[in-house]
Image (tube, rainbow, N blue to C red):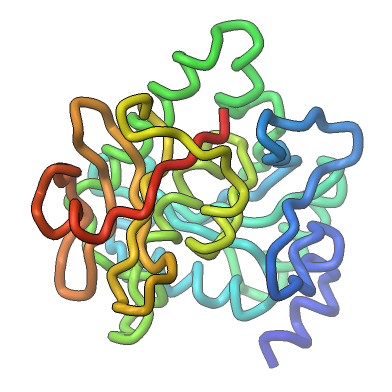
Length: 253
């Protein structure tokens, strides 16, 4: 039923979010410049909702994802959450999708985010340091938010790669969804050369494969979603557990 609604609306197809390959290729709006290290800049996106309950924001996110749209919820203001979704090549296509979803009751009021509104669009003017600082500001707004991605489902939390993807996309950079793909998309960076906004990766599953990621916040600390039953927080790379499982850092700027 959900998929038929989204197909009728044409939202997933117009935004370039569906179908997705097994290893996600970054999408790019027509005419949009490419970010360094291969990350595409986001095109037009839709923001909807104004929830005081994070579970409601997560539930709308899950609904949109089930319809084939790339969606994330974020902390708009203290105690308020919104959802952002899609990557459309034009404002008109974003608006048409939003109005159709509004008509069938999936969303209520909405706002169209233009590519020029993202922090990444000001990178050329203000420099990499400015963008890195904005990435950390975004990540810090999530601190204390429950590990929650997918409403009430205990098996699907606001997982580590969902957090890093959200932070990058809310600043206009189309980071892949899965931690292993994020690892492959970045340029290797030595630990001593890590800068704010770089991602740090770990193998915590016992398989040797990438299974956890956080965003480096400076001074040897990183922000991450540590697991079910825990809130998003900052930890030290020097902690014995993370030191033991550390697999390397990646830069995208």
